[in-house]
Length: 77
Image (cartoon, rainbow, N blue to C red; front, side, top):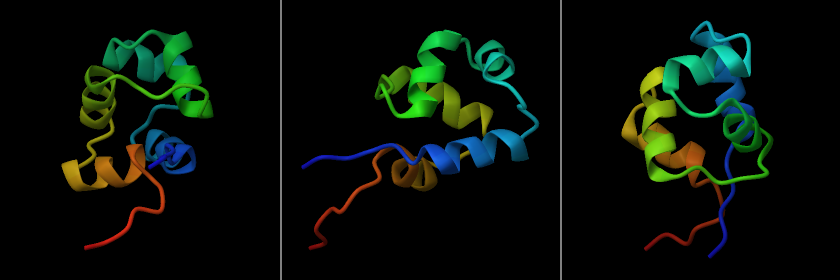
């Protein structure tokens, strides 16, 4: 099963939380800005550590993070 990252939602949450640049979010999270740029453009999937750091900085709940970082058409039980 394939999944994608909802980059549009991540960028929206960045702005809502006062991060107007990738650099500002990188400084807050400790995630390399090049890596963060690739995550936000959908070129790279984040490591679990990067997901945790981004979710914490953007004040994303676990459920919301799952929907953002694992967007896709998953079958329901």
